[in-house]
Amino acid sequence: MTESKRLRRSAEAMAGGAAPSGLAACIDGRAGLLRARAAGERLAGLAAGLGEAPVSLLTRGQEGTAFRHFPAGDVYDLSSHAQFYYHSHRDGEFGHIHLFQRPRGMPRGLAPLVATADPDAPCHLIAVGFGARGEATELFTTNRWVTGEAWYRADAVKAMVAGLRLAPAGPWAPVARWLAAMVEFYRPLIDVLIDERDQAVAAWGRAHPGRDELNDERLEITSARSIDPAADLAGLGP
View 1 (tube, rainbow, N blue to C red):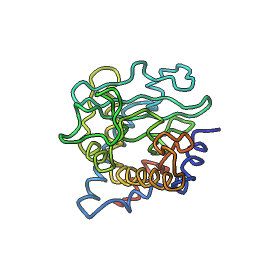
View 2: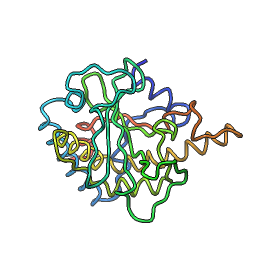
View 3: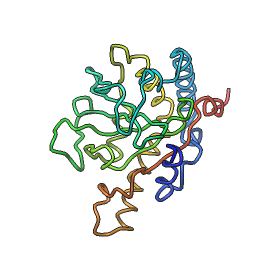
View 4: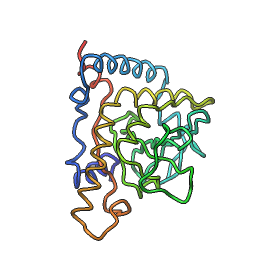
């Protein structure tokens, strides 16, 4: 099954499928629209400057197997304590980037609803899915069991997204800048997806009483939208 089909099947159960992004409808006011346009133009410039697809830069032509991380050891920003990697969940998928924030880079006062044994356990912010040509085609959130994250309420995760400062040094810096610009451009939509994540998990729990909804492997993708950065920028008007 392709990545896109998997996302749609998993999201359909709780979120109605991976609908078109609807970014414009998520933006609040004229100031928000101007910020989104500027962010979209910055994203387009960074994407062009990469010279090739982010996936190609991360894998460097290596063949991937399910759950193999690219790059090995992940990309970790020592200043912001943000982290990301590219992988797939099943052989034959186009793959996706998972983006995380670790506690030392979180806004003050945030505490997980469900912690792990590791006090430095990260919070999953968003995943970016890719198509056959390595282009970004989807944004999605996942249930807790997928990444083993420390689970934070939606408002806390949105605060982390708003405060994201992803700027690692080294060979992965260009991809990191592209990813940070992607998050900045789609932040209004990402906020919606994070809210839908909590709604999907709550609805799953009501529909399956007696089960731990955060660790129920039948619920994998908790919200998803198809994206097309160029088309979504054009949709914001001149």
